Image (cartoon, rainbow, N blue to C red; front, side):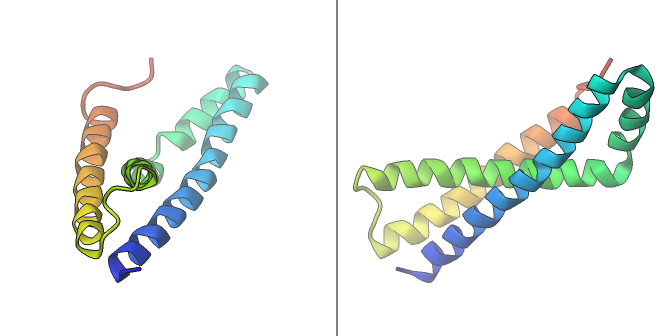
Length: 117
């Protein structure tokens, strides 16, 4: 296995872990919804803070990378792209796709009017 495959595999696992941790934010938001208007207003103030927007951007990058790497693994499951050179090339494509997808998600969420009502 090439070092590109190893780094890509480790990165895929780490992004999965980050996404799992990101679920705690979703849980916080859902619990605040269930607790009523006062709890939701407090959670909304916290969840709209700048530090959490940075975390959302990192989660978007983790999601995009995990998605692209997952597609790469699906291709590998068909028996294609398994040579060392193909693995190296596909690692670059995964990274490029992840950056493009993350940029679109971040722009859409933070700058294109996707604000909560």
